[in-house]
Amino acid sequence: MYRIISKRVILFLLLLLVLDIAAAPFLTWGYARPSFSYLAILYVAFEYGWKSALPVAILVGFLRDLTSGAAVGMETLLLAFVVFVLDKANKNVISQSTFFRVIVTFLFILGLQILYLAGFSLVSPDIKISWFNLSLAVKAAFLNTLILPPFLYLATRFFDKKKRFHQFELFR
Image (cartoon, rainbow, N blue to C red; front, side, top):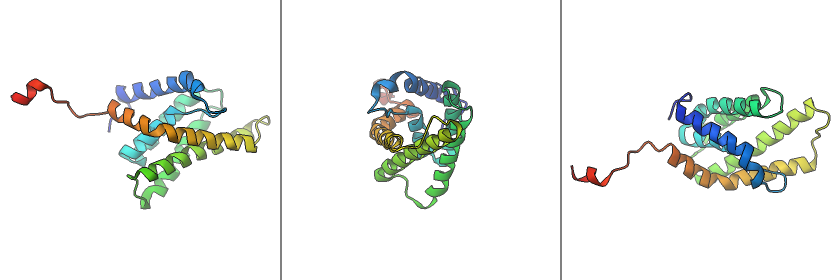
C-alpha cells in the first residue's frame, strides 16, 4: 500500500474531497448524496485491511471537518470510531466476497449517517432525529452502495502498481 503521506494518496483524497463538495450535490437522490471520500476509506479497508483504513479515516475526517460547517473533530472521531468497530467485527468474516463488501458498505455509510445525525442532534437544538432524516441516511447508504463497484474499479486503476509491458519490451 502507498504510504499515507505519499503525494499520490493525498492527491487522491483531495480530488475526492473536491468531488464531494462540487460534484456530489448534482448526484443526489432526494436529499441524499454520495460521499466519495467515504468510499475511499472502504477501498483501503477492502484492499489493505481495516487497520490500514484507520489512518485514512482520520485524514479524511480531518479534511471533511475543515471543509464543513460542523464542529471540528466530530467527523474525524465518528469515522475513526466506525472503522475501529468494523476492524474488530471483521476478525471472523471472509472479507473478499462481493456480498460482504456490499453489506459492509451499506452498514458503514448507514452507521456513519445515523451517528452523525445523533451527534448533530445533541449539539444543535434545530436538528432532530426524525423518520425523514433516517430515511435520508438509508438513501445515502443505498446510493453509496450503488456507486461502490465503479468506484473500486477506478480506484484500483489509479493505484495500480503493475508495470505495463510495452511492445518493444516483449522482444528484448
